[in-house]
Structure formats: C-alpha cells, structure tokens
Length: 307
Image 1 (cartoon, one colour):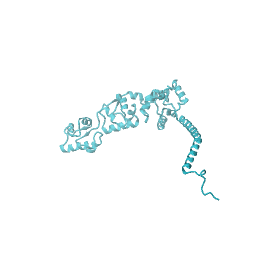
Image 2: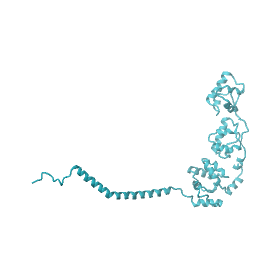
Image 3: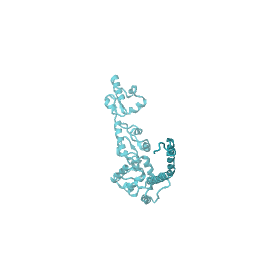
Image 4: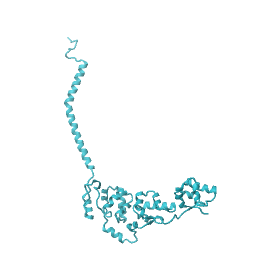
C-alpha cells in the first residue's frame, strides 16, 4: 500500500528551503572567512616586503670609495658635506684626469660623457675651472655647480705654459675682442661660446654687413642673455659696417638678403624709388610708412643713397 500524501514532517516549503540554504551559507562563511582573511593578510605582507626590497634597490647609492680616494689624492680634502644631499655626488676633481665613468656621478648623461671622452682623446685639455662652460651640450647650471670643485693638476698647467702658438684661454678672455674682425676661433675663447655658436656669429655678421654695436650679438640665435652679460665687458665694436646697400641701384633681392629688411619693406623701398626717382639723401626713406624712427636708426647703418 503506497502513501498518497507525503508526511508533513519530511516536507519543506519553498521559503523553508531558501531559509535552510541561507543558514548553511552563513554558517560556512563564519567558519572559513577568518582563514581566508588570514591568508590574504599574509600574502599582502609578503607583497609589501617584496616591494620594499625592490624600492631599496632603486635608491641612489653613495659614490664609491674609489671616487673619494681619487678626490683626496688630488686635493687632500675629504669628500665634501655628505650630510648635504643636494651635493652628495660632488667632489674635488681634475677634469683632465677624472675617469669618464666617474663623471657619471655628477648626473651627466651618457652622450655628453662620450663628448668629453672624445675631446680629451684628441688632446683637448681643461686649463682652468671655467673651461667646463665650453663643453658643448653641458648645461650652464650644471657647469657652474661643478666649477668650484675643479682642481687642475700641474701637468695641465705645464702644457698651457709650454705649447707654442697656442692662445691661452685665460689670456684670450682677458683681452678685448673686436666683434667685427674676430674670427670664429677668437670667439670660441670667450666663456660660454662653443665652435657652433662662434661660427653662427660670424655668419650672422656677414649677412648684416658688420656690427655697429656689441648689443647686436644678442640677436644671434642660441646666445643666451646670461652668456652675453658674462662676456659683454670683453667686447668692442671699432669698425663701422663694411658692407652697405645702395638704395638707388640695388635690386629687391639684394634688400631681401639683409636680416633687417623683409619682403614688404624691400618692395616699398624699391617702389618709392620708381615713383619718386632716386633718393637724394638717406633720410628720405623715413617717408615710407613702414619705417618708424626705431626702424630707421637700425637699418640706416646698412644703407646709403649714392648716385
């Protein structure tokens, strides 16, 4: 005989089943959750320890003892102010003798280290601390930071005093330089002027036709105001521009070749001559709208009204 109806004690309603399932879930959660949290915390601690080890590897290390010994050997002075972190990698050194690898401790990039190495291998020497400013590509701020720690050895001084036909940098910097007659080599003798900038000055001078004031050097691309102020007292400008343009016979192309004359002004100068005849005097160009007093004072040094 089969039972037609299930016993009410063995039967659970849908809500009761859901409640039992929820109760079991909560019980399991309470049992296993503490272990789960403990494992996560352990893993997190391990991860943090690994991260700290990795970060410690990235921290800057002190300059090795060989550099300190090197600086002491040169000057009998100890590695300077190790408590001052801003100068932790500075030490007294001879730029002619310091191994290239040790220049890196100053924070100098690899490409510049190669430049210094090539310069020395070709016989280039540093004769006084300020010669660091002549290293092409070396930021002036970095150079000025290193200069107080430069100590030139006796060998460099001996070479400076005995090489024949050599313009001593120190003496060259003391003498006055005429910006209208100096060649690129003489410009290079000035603090902060490298071979590229020296050549650029000469090219610009040729395009102008000569300088009429030392302040025109500030128009040369790449010449910083700080460098100009350093060398200003050593510059002179004796000669008037040696090349002038005759506005009564020149073509518009000749005018356009001059840095101070653009296309609009060049065309206006030629058109005025066509309309009114030859200029009787240079001052007549002030009648052209494009030429104010400031412009006239600037270009008058390079123009002439001759028959």
